[in-house]
Length: 413
Ligand SMILES: Nc1ncnc2c1ncn2[C@@H]1O[C@H](COP(=O)(O)OP(=O)(O)OP(=O)(O)O)[C@@H](O)[C@H]1O
Ligand SMILES: [Mg+2]
Image (cartoon, rainbow, N blue to C red; front, side):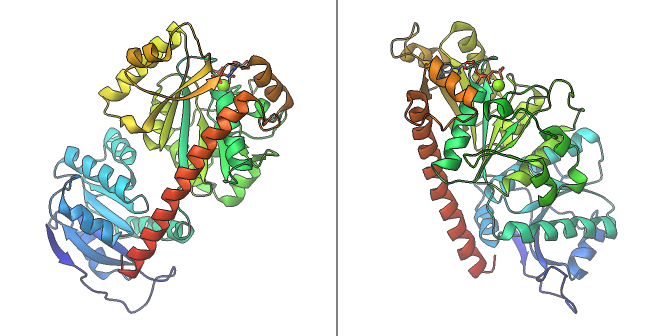
């Protein structure tokens, strides 16, 4: 239920970034959070736009109200019921990806903090709250807002093999290169292998000074300039953040830093493609959770199909949305040993894309370091159709998102 809307500004001055940031609180306990309530009411940096009593879920009409307001920040009190708060934060994050979510809690247990971050919270504020801590968090949102205003999050496409050698790198490099060259989309490939990934080699780079994990290890100084200095630029237009080479294994980097780095990169590209090592590691599943599409790449052989079935079972057990999972059958034969219908029946999931088995074409593209060089080959034609499909759908959604934001801003959201 909405109890308050637009309490009005008590402004003598205006924040450095221009207009104050709009805030909505969710299940806020005004007694426990009276300090924060004071900042919200008095700070010229923020404007309290409303308070939602209780936690919201998908069917809650208040969600539409929130989407229309599209506040800069939602402060969710996690102390009432942590499960409901987590769910509410997830919904807000999904429906309002440009809204920053602050978790507010008196419990600082590290697994609680991690859980809040995982469901989309960018800040974890401790009760009783500290004015400086709160203003710093608001300032970070203000700084990011300027950047985000003109941008929409790029599509995150994650590729995981049912087992090693299924063709993940071949497919991700081809799709990325065609998205860049033939669909004129800004695309970057991140090779997430902890050592010795093949992404750079398949794109013709043999020597490079930096790798993705070093960038993720530098989040405190991450900005557009630092990112530029890490990127390799392929002639197709595809950018690449390579994996470390074997002689310099990656330092262990916190999954949070990896996710934050990916989110930062997403703001600068239409497509971010992630070449993951095989398996459902914690790191892979966290990246998958944030992805628009997860491509599970398999070949039509029993060991790969057995693993794929296990992946799909696991993902459905953890309630990962089925629409976001797409099965790609690589090295496809028209009359393969296991017919496609049997594969679909066994894995209980449709095959989204079939990439033909053409060893010599693939090897030529890999050796030449340019997936787009043999645009007439069967493999290239297949992936080009796929890039067209992905590129077209994405530009339709981006257009819609932009139109919605324009409308909401006219309504004062
Ligand atoms: N469609 C295809 N037709 C024929 N050969 C293919 C095809 N796709 C991949 N290959 C071959 O399979 C091998 C493995 O491909 P790739 O390196 O892309 O797999 P991967 O899943 O990235 O492996 P890893 O798990 O080691 O990262 C390569 O030698 C490549 O030439
Ligand atoms: Mg690979």
